[in-house]
Amino acid sequence: MKTSIVFLLCISVFPGFSQGRVVGDDETGFAECNMFFSGQVPPEGFTEPFHVKICQQYNKEPRFATLYSTKDKIPLYSAFKYTKAAQNEEENWLVEPQIDDPENDLHEMVHEANIVGTVANLGANQALTSDYVGSGYERGLLNPSLLNEEDFQMATYTLTNAVPLSPSLSKSWHRDIGRVVEQALVPHCSKKDHLYLLAGAIPSSVRVKGKVSVPETLWLAACCDAPEGWSLGLVKKMNDENSLVDLVVGELEKQLLSGVHLFKGNCGEDHQSQGKTEAILQAVSQIRSGEQVGISDNQEAKDSGFVRKVAGIIATPFIKILELLIYVFVELVKFVFYFLWLVIKRVGGTVLDGVYSLWKGVVSYLKAISMVLISIPYDVGRVIVNIFLGFLQIVQDVVSLTYSILRIPVGFVLHLAAFPYHSICAIPSVLRDMATGIGGTFSLVIDATAALLHGFYYLAGHIVKRFVPKGSSDD
Image (cartoon, rainbow, N blue to C red; front, top):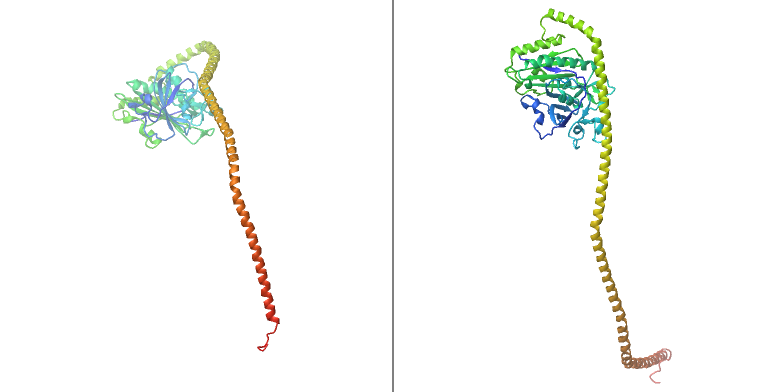
């Protein structure tokens, strides 16, 4: 029987410290994080423009890969491998600056409090701690910290690996996923470094504070890409925290986006071991019913259970006291280190700020001095040019004034010298004009008198002809 194990589960939150970077479109798959996928080929079919690929890193080493939905503000899946679980867990949540502000210079995950006001549109494309405060939901990890050793564990505490989960479902997830991976999956994969795990979420329309999608289902697909390999799956629904249903990978892919293919070459489905598959399913069934995997003799289990119960009753007070002392000691050490860190941070910050301010002052002073030294030759040259131009203007004014002074007497002398000549030469013309005028006047008087006499003569003749009768011929 070919089966696929897919976990649709809740994750409780134990924060740590991680770094990561958004993978560019020009890079293949998840870049250096392709190692967390079977055949180094990521799942196919997740092609929406709001799907962002993140290579989650810590100490500049790849730890796991995440496909993040900026629309739903939750991861769609995280790909990882099982490592030896670490015992020390410390909450230390981080965010990915480049999801909200691709132009910033921060290429690794950072503390949210350290970038408030420095990253543009912080929270526009990803969930923040404030989205969970007072919501009734925990930040559940798709890649659970309890399945990772220290460095890998600290890398899981990033909000790009978290989904909103109820506290009870979170507890159920850690209980079930820890036992399934460590007791059912890891023991039945001959090459443990070839065990590939994909934990994902199917978003719903329910939103935390109108922003972060609450998944309707969480899943984990397991693939053992080794001789006698297999691929199996489990499903846990959000509305039933006690459910744990196994199904084949092909059935899981039908519940996701159309065209999704999780593992390259179906990851061992064509040559998987029937015996190992049945053993894994039997182990999962025992975990589902709450039994401890590996104990087949019920009577032996009862006897050993009674002995453990008596020993537990006797040892419990001492264990509790020891746990209290350890807890107090750990908290005291944490407080001391935290206090020392604050002191070093404050002193170091003050010293660095002073050095930076001093450096800025020196640079500004040197810049001002340089500008003054550079401007001196220019100012000297400009003064020399202005002096030369002023001298030329003075020479021009002197020449112009001299020319004007010399020009006035020459004209006056010429006109004065020409006056007698023009005056003497004009006398004959004046006398001639006077004689002509006197002659014309006498001629005019004579003509007028003659005309007057001729008029009187004409008038007298006319009167005589009019009033004197003509005489007869005898007269």
